[in-house]
Image 1 (cartoon, rainbow, N blue to C red):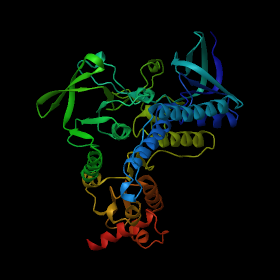
Image 2 (image 1 turned 90 degrees about the vertical axis):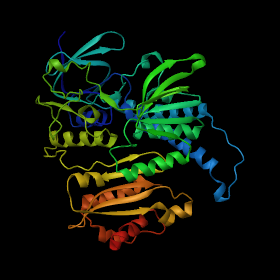
Image 3 (image 1 turned 90 degrees about the horizontal axis):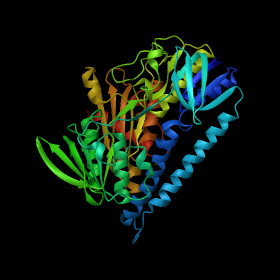
Image 4 (image 1 turned 45 degrees about the horizontal axis):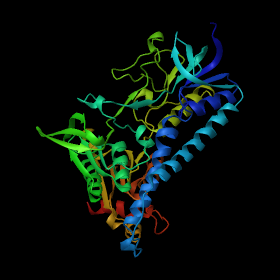
Length: 464
C-alpha cells in the first residue's frame, strides 16, 4: 500500500492535538488527525468536563444538607443518580460532537477514526473501525495519545469488577460502600463527591499523609475537611488482597503498620496514578526514546530525539493537566509556523484540585523551598479570618504563600478555600509579572471579594 502524503500527522485528538490540527490546516498544511476513540481526549470525555458536572451536583447536595445555619431549612432532599448521569452525558456529548463537527468542517484537515501505529520513522498505519486500513506519511508527526489508569498488582484484583476514573462515570446508582485506592487529587475528588451523593466512603493512601507532594499543613487541612464529612481517611494503608463475595460484596484485606484486617465494600475505585498510552504505538519503528515508565522523552521544544516527531500532553510525562497540554500545542505551533523560539523552560504550572473547597496551587511549596535551601518567608491566613468566607458561612481552609525574603517576590501559593483556584490565579499573575507581596498588601481590591483577603494574607508578614 502506498502511503498518502501529508504535511502533518497528529495521533490523538486531545487538548493539544485537536487545536493544533485545526491551526495547522488553517495555515495551509495538509493535516491528518487520527483518533481511536472520541474527539476531545480525556478532558472532554472522562476527565474535566464530566467530573466537574458531577462536582456541581455534589455541591448542590452538600448545600441542601448544610443550609440550616444560614436560616434555610430543607427538610429532605433526594439525590437522583440517573438524572445526574444524564446531565453529565448531555454536556459531554454536546462538547464532543461540537468539536468533532468543527474538525470535520476544517479545510485541509482529514479526521480519521482508528488505531494508529508506526510502520516506519514517519509512516503511520491506521486500522479503521470497519477493519480496513490506511497508510499515511508526513514530515511532522505529533503524538497526543494521553494516558490511562494505572492498574496496580494486587492479589485478586483481576477477579473483581473494580472501577477506574473512566468507568465510574457510567454509574447510574450511588454505591453503598465505596473504597477509594489512592489519596491524591482524583481519588479525593471522587471520594468527596460520592460521599455527598450518599455513599459510605473509605480512602486508602500508602503514604504517611494525603497528597504527599503538598505541604504537610495543607495535606492535614484537606484531611480535616474530608473527615468533617465523615469520610474514613486511612493513611499509611494499602489494600493487599481482594476477593469477590456474595451479593456483590467485595472483601478487601487492608494492611496498616503490619496489621491486616478484612473489610467488605460494594465498589472499589482505583486512583493510584496513570500510565502513558505508548505500548501499542510501534515506537520501536521510529527510534523515539521513552523512559522506564513508557513516557516519551522530549526536549524543551517538545521534540523527541527524532527530528520532526513531537510529543504533547500527558504522554511526555511531567504535569498531567489539560492546560499544560493546550500550552504544549501553542508552543509547537508558534515555533513551527510563526518561527518563534519558545520553550517550556520555567513556564508556570498552576493547578486546582476540585474538592470542595478547592485547592489552587501555583509555584513551589514550602517543602520545595526548604529542599532548595531558599531564604523564604511564609504567609498564612486561615479562611476563618477572611470576611467573605465568614459572610458566606464557609470558613474551611487556609491561604498560604511562599515569598523570597530578599526580592519580596512570590515563589508559590496554596489556596485551600472557596474559589481557591480563582484566588490562586490572581497570585499567578503576580508571579508572572514580578509583583512583590508588599504591593499586593496595599492593592485596592473590591470589597468583599475573596481576593481582597490577599491584603490580610500579606499583612501577616509584618508580624514576623
